[in-house]
Length: 286
Image (tube, rainbow, N blue to C red; front, top):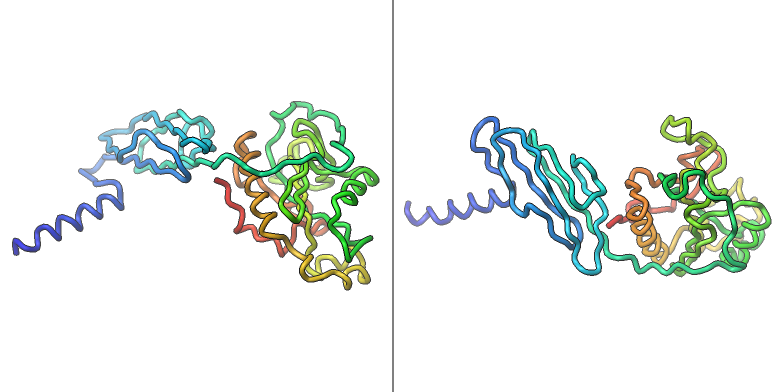
């Protein structure tokens, strides 16, 4: 029997590390801190309290990383030093993002001057994703950035950013200015956002073409039939660039992940993009 005691003790210790909390009686509360990415959190041990307690927590990123936000019931999810009220078993996670290496270039013809948002960058609450191409006019060569820029200037529409097939992000409009990308629509039953998302959202266009069914009423049957299957959907380079750009913008403007929406969600039935071929599971906010 004595030979089994070390094994039993090891099992107990492993269980403690995995669960992170041992109940020492009724009315006790555990706080466990974790992290995603590279950095440190304080306190760096699982703490147990005998009564509801306000606890200070802090997050410090490693070099080359930035603090993004807290996941969990903290007082200020975007402050690296904040508090959490522990009145039940509580888990809080610090999210760190690797400093973005996404390349942001000036577009052909230069940036498009647009009026400033009434509240400046404080108005930025959402990010809207779109897809764009020149497939209607040039189905065999739908992704020339010069042509995308020409479409913006000619039709009086534009997005803040456009990501090309190789993963370069072009900035067409300043972040603190309104771009005409959202159009009509509504979101979250918020009357501020009805037909007015341009004021509150950054627009990101991704060069891409949807399924044959999605494009049937968009570019016409003849152009649709000439689209190469390799030109439909999006590239690995685009997903990598999009993740870098989203991490940069969500961190800069304190935008939670659930406020990254599609054009289709804002205006269902009329808009399709970025469409069924867009792989939302590949979005990784670090």
